[in-house]
Image 1 (tube, rainbow, N blue to C red):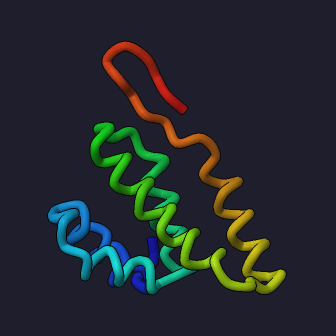
Image 2 (image 1 turned 90 degrees about the vertical axis):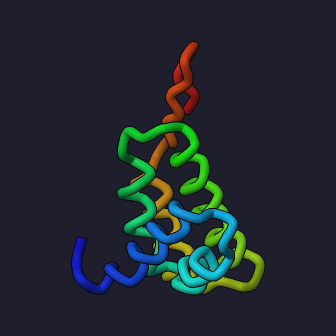
Image 3 (image 1 turned 45 degrees about the horizontal axis):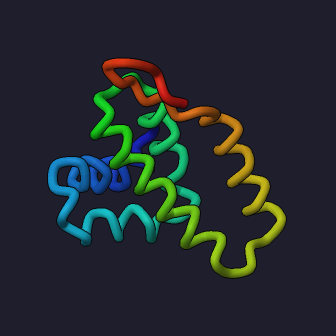
Length: 99
């Protein structure tokens, strides 16, 4: 990842370290479309289910913020691009894999 995503990655890491702190999550959500590429990369990694669910919740908050108001065509295409790039979010449970 490039240096321009470093502040977003730092905010994501702060959120993962303390999910009850809303300020780091809010910084990621306020990043809007710029927050999606690093989140997509993190969500594609094999990780403990708790971490995956925290990242997934953050991803959904960004989408909710973006899609609750009118969105331009280019922005909608970017959202679709990142969603396609992400694909299924894999959650590994002791008895199965959930996608």
